[in-house]
Each structure stands twice: as structure tokens, then as C-alpha cells.
Length: 376
Image 1 (cartoon, rainbow, N blue to C red):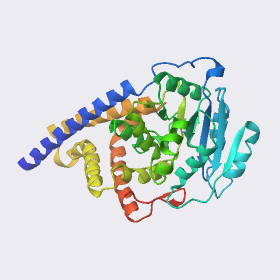
Image 2 (image 1 turned 180 degrees about the horizontal axis):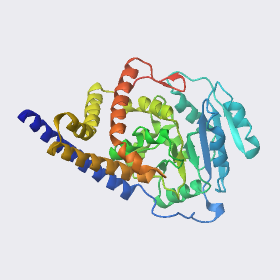
Image 3 (image 1 turned 90 degrees about the horizontal axis):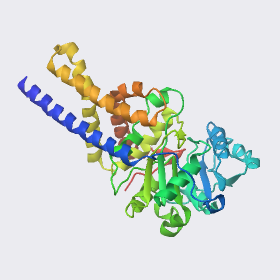
Image 4 (image 1 turned 90 degrees about the vertical axis):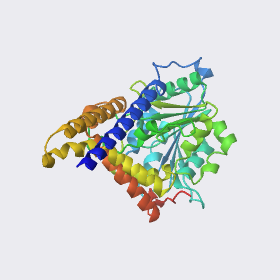
């Protein structure tokens, strides 16, 4: 029993350290990753930079209409919209073409060259067609408000940035896909550092000519799981990159099914851990430790209620409160309920970390039906 109590004390010390570190990281994020107020465009309409919205799509009939209607409603005056159909097997191509009268330009995807990931090749094809000063790459799951592009451009100009990415909000009504969502963007904030900055792939804007001149578009990142992360890290070194947590004023949100979020996590987690089994084991153990307070509380059912269950309850409330504070920034509603699901979230994440490593080892990770190779 003494040994067990010693182990519990060690667990409490580790949990306290994890909580304090997470609290510091979250405070940093809230201080540095925000637009302080509604931005106003710099200069007259004629002096505004042009923007090309680029959307890669593959088998996206379920989400395409709403996404395009939101982009078309943009109030930004110098806008070009290009959508690429990446050899879909459904009616995505016909749906995109139906928006031609609204000014949306259709680009037909081509056969995937050797060594390229499907999305990266689609982004490269879109970039070649773009003519804007800035290019806004966004997923079909992303939703814009009419003022989003104007706000993003104004912020970019004020910050003298070459690239800005936005953590999108959940603006939809409470649903399972939000309550049980993986911790993908939470980790972006927690592990942000100068050589590996927080980056969002659903909506990111970059100076087009810089992307072409510095990296030949996506050529240098043709097999990268997240090319935008590599680009942001490079630009961060020269203080030309910014990351924003979405706000109601900015109006950038997303809607994504739980199954799609899980698939994305499986594709991203193992590469983000450096493709190393030892990192996967450490990450999995850390996640299980973070969920330990719940199990300490439940142990009272079998071992009786005492000081350990009280301490476990305190840690449970600390971690759920911290997670709820994060969700309050990125969810429109029901963030408090989501906070109390913290133990579920970290246990699910531990499972996804293991699944990601196993699926890569089995060469079974795919994106939109195409095989994704394990990181080297």
C-alpha cells in the first residue's frame, strides 16, 4: 500500500506539472493569437490587394454547395474564386460547374504524378491558376462570413505578414461531431514554438509570389503531410507568419463529421510525432496520465472514498475547466458540456495516436481514397 501511495503522489506531481504547463500555453495563445478588434481595410478599394480563393475538392457533394455559397457572399471587392475537382467519383465536378454563373472558375484535376500527395498536387494546380496578390487556401469544410476575407486581408497588412492561418470556430448547433471531436487544434496551441508554429490547414492565406519564388509553390513539399506547417515554420523564422484563433468577428468556422475528423487525426498524428514509435508511446502515456483523475475518482467505488478521491476530483475539475476555457474560444455554444468530456477526449486521442502508428505500419493510411506514405 505504501508503494501505491508513493506512485499516486508521483502521479499528482506529474498532473500538477501538466496542468500548469497547459495553463501557461493557453494564456500565451489567448494573448498572442487574436485580433483585438474589428479590422478596417487599409487605403481605398483600388489600393487593396487582390485575393484568390483556392478550394481543392474530391468527392465533396455533401458540403460543396454551402461552402461555395458562403464564399460567393463575400463583400471583398477584388476576389477570384477557383475550385479544383480532383478526379472525384461523384457529382462534385457538375456541382462546381453549376456555380460558373456566379463567377467561380472550375479547374479539372489531372492524374497524380509519382511522389506527390493528392491534396498537395491539387494545391499546386490551383496555385498555377491563381492571379491574386494573396491566395486563400481553404477546405470545403470551412465556412466564411461575408466580411471574413476583408478582415483577414486587413490583419495581414497591419501585421506586415506574408502568411496567416486561422483556427476555425464551431458555429453550428451542439452536435456529436463537436462534443466528441479529436484534439487536433488543441495540440497546435499547446505545442506552438518558433520552429514549429501552430498552423491551421482549413483556412490559410499566403502572399502568392513569395510561395512561388521561395518554394516553387508546393514542389519542395510534394510528399509532406502538412505542407502549410513547413511553410509557416520557414516564415516564422523571419517573423512573417501569424496564427489566429477564430472569432465571431472574423467569421471563419468549420463543420466536419466526426468520422472525417478521426480520419484526419489518424493521417496527421504519427507524422507530427516524427514518425517514431518511441514518441508515440510517450504521447500515449501522457494522454492516459491526463485522464487518470477520473479513474482515481472511480476507484472510490471499490476502495472506498478518501483523500485520493478528493485530490482526483480537484484535478478533474482543474483539467475540465482548462479545456472548457479553450472550447469557449472555439465553440459558439455548449462549451461547458464539452469541457466535462475532457477524459473522453484524451482517451480517444491516445487510441488515435496508436491507430495512426499502426495504420502507417500497415501502409493503410489514405486520404480521399489515395494511399498516404509513412513519414521517412
